[in-house]
Image (cartoon, rainbow, N blue to C red; front, side):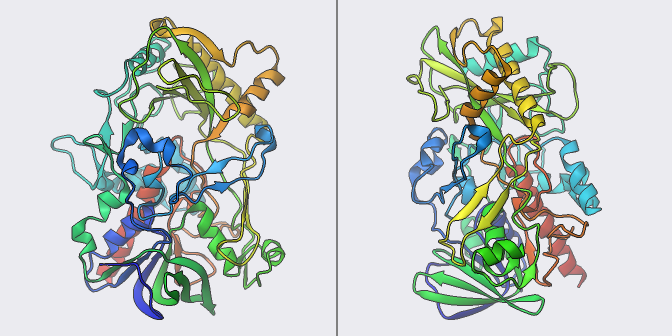
Length: 517
């Protein structure tokens, strides 16, 4: 059942804060036990904008009423630019806004997770059952989870097929997809699209049947102000609802508000770095210096731009149709990828450049799969409306800058290949680049976020890690963090698949423990 209203006080077994990807999955999975009362708390509303389900409309969704539309601090590494970070403020969260690409990652991406926690659950093999439980690959005889993972070969643009042929001719393997444990190679992207429409997490997991469960309450328009503590536990959750303040008492609190709001809520509640809290006027109850640190994000250069020889039909998908992963400086070496080149069936450029008319140009995007730059997130005050200081420290390491140069070079090598001669008239951007400084200046102006913030409540067994291998916040007995903020490091591609696997793995462990009890 759904509730848009609030009362004075509610009691439940499990309270899930954040109705995004992780929270929606957890609400569906954990409410399967009819003896367990579950409340899902979401600051936004249900999705109603029809554009959300139109795959090609996704760039235009940013900045609408259901986008938190965070803004970073000006970044020295990107020519002093501040970047808008779109985050979904509605049931389904950022799965309603993102570009629908679905990639598990490379097996080596997860080895540091298992090493950091000392727990094989977070390795590739350990997470494989969770990935498989989530996914519907539309293949006969294969287990079908709730989330469609659609292979887009048939709908992909002829430009994309030429891009794939170019990469293959340069030595990149032609792989089946990005979800088989091999990332290096060329293939059309798999996407969360069914029958030509976006499949957001709320569509997949919060079905009418799930919503009808009497033990599940979905509370919308409910902004969590803070967590009130007693000893080593959350006593209650204080919410600003449509009709005033409501308190929720829960046996277990699952924090699924994402890599920005999860650490921000902890800090507003007095849990975090003492100096940051005191500067924001918040009494420090639990000094946890690492909360809000280790902030990571993928960047893409937008872009290596070409004018067309003939009209380019619009994408039948969502513009960015193929991501080619590779090692830096080699199209044939295997292993864990270092850089990526993406085929954009549109003139995709940063705000620093003027985009030509659709149909007259296309972009190859380029980026680094495992950036070593680490940033911070800080609060400025005790209220949810107080500004967050988001500093991803983009391109602050020489390794990231070096790999970005290699990614641009790879994009231009593919771009000049004979397989693309049918489409390519001439390169518009970047044009002639003589020195390393000129290359770096172009990259700084071209870089845009790939929308993958993560790492701000990292899991680990070391003393400073805020979250343990069970995803429990170490300072409290009944609070768990289940979202991208627990990731010690980024996966090679889009992180959505990994976030859902984290949530599925956590839910399965909780359900198994319940059975044993």
